[in-house]
Length: 510
Image (cartoon, rainbow, N blue to C red; front, side):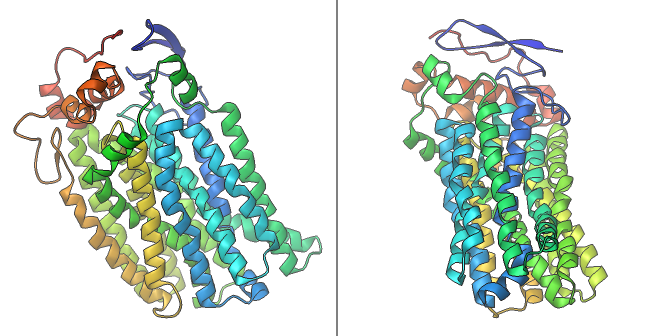
């Protein structure tokens, strides 16, 4: 059923637009139908998660084949550790830049451009012949992981506040699934190529053409079928005057000065950052510790990433459900509990000695750490409306910083055994999750304190990012609509008792 909903404009009369899904005042979908491909909302969802999935497959395609690649290129433990760090370090700055790019040109062009720019590095993996070459291709391929930021930005632009947690959770989770899928795909492709007569040192090189082609294909799909916002693409909307052109300096300024973004960047560094670390080390860990076959170690390692089918989406869904009852405070408590439990099970994983127990503990650990990732991006969309991309980039970049630091400290060279490194990594998760206690929204409260006694409203919070001249031009209208829609973050009791009787609607002409 198509539902017509008016689209306010500051420069043009109201226009009627048709959507297949019910929408709010920003034309964001108020429901999340995972089996639908309805334009533009659900189609954007499927394009975003699958492109991120393809980038994840490419970025970690080398990990399950390391036992073969290290023999061919004479890689040392230090070489492998450095390459693992390189695979996630490049995306630190790429994710921050991606956030700003999304704010300025939209997620469609930003993500497609990055995917196409990094695809050659995946192809070039097939011709490397030295440890330095191995490090460089992993470094440049890892830039593609910044598509996570465009994925979360895109979902936050397409789905309303009541379902944005699950939209972000499913898109990020199914994209992260590539980290597990590649543990199965690459050994299988490698074996098939060997069966056709190639030697093992030739087969692993040919295998990299599969993820490279898949990654390239997703970029063209986004360009052809994707749409930035419910009402159209960034370029067209800015040209018609329906979307105001923002100043990059002010977008960055309001994002960087919001301390909540920095705290979420830190905590995300020890949920998603840990997930990236595990993707790099887990196959080799089981292969060496328990003397398993390459394919068997790959299956076990894949199970960690494959938990993203339900764990990260489940985290986003749980965040939405907690917000419905307890508001933003529920989202914060939910994240802290889940991520702390992830740290506990990570500590246990490094201490257990049997194969069966290690696999069980790893699976439990994977559910909690990936759910925490989904819960984080149930909070991110509410930190800033004007600088959503910057906040998303900061948080996503924090995930890669956490991965880099963790691998440098615990898994580079032979300073710590992998078992000891995993245990210490778990302790870091628990410690780095504590700053969540400091996040406070004056209109909603924090983990220990309720809303400000001065009765700060959603409008007060989000319109503070705009000065009087910008408001006179109507640049703040998007923030005004978002503020009204975000009243759901008050929680059930507070929302019912304090919601004003009149909707906040910006004037149609200025």
